[in-house]
Amino acid sequence: MPAYVVETNVAIVANNRPQQIPQADLDCISTCIDKVVECAAILKGEVPGTIVLDLHGEIEAEYERHLNYSGQPGVGDEFFAVVHQYGYGPACERVEITPCDGSYLEFPSTAALEAFDYADRKFVAVALASTHTPTILNAVDTDWSAHRSPLESAGVRVLELCPQCLLRR
View 1 (cartoon, rainbow, N blue to C red):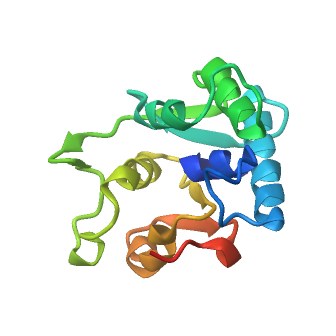
View 2 (cartoon, rainbow, N blue to C red; view 1 turned 45 degrees about the horizontal axis):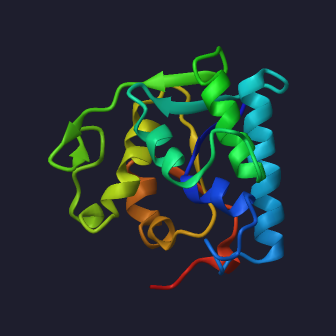
View 3 (cartoon, rainbow, N blue to C red; view 1 turned 30 degrees about the vertical axis):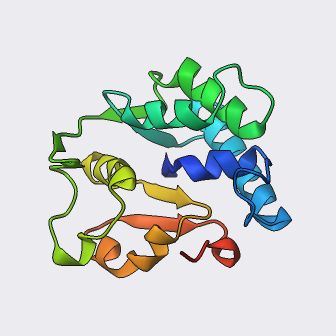
């Protein structure tokens, strides 16, 4: 049964607003739409699986900065509306993560991850705190692929939905 942590950029790409993420090609947009539709269906109990979020809403706060609660006009916005409505239901695991010096106690303390983006550490912390061993879904953020090996060594699984579109910084 699938378990996912949805990185914000997946829902943003699913909204198909090129001005927000211009590197997302049509295949990437289509893949992200399919994945957030699947995740929304999981939350609604229409298909088996689990979506993992943090107990105090840090992931949702990030979603809110980039997506619309109304569920309009994009598919990513619709996903966010479903998270808001079903995020405490049986298909959502809420885990405790502990903020510490701009990071989280659950985030691996290894030199290989020292440069990992602080804004994305909540997703790693949530994945590691989960009992479901979720896969983190990523669309276009290079930090995930740049740190693939140390993340995997720490037990974090990442699915690169759009490897052809990873933004090179």
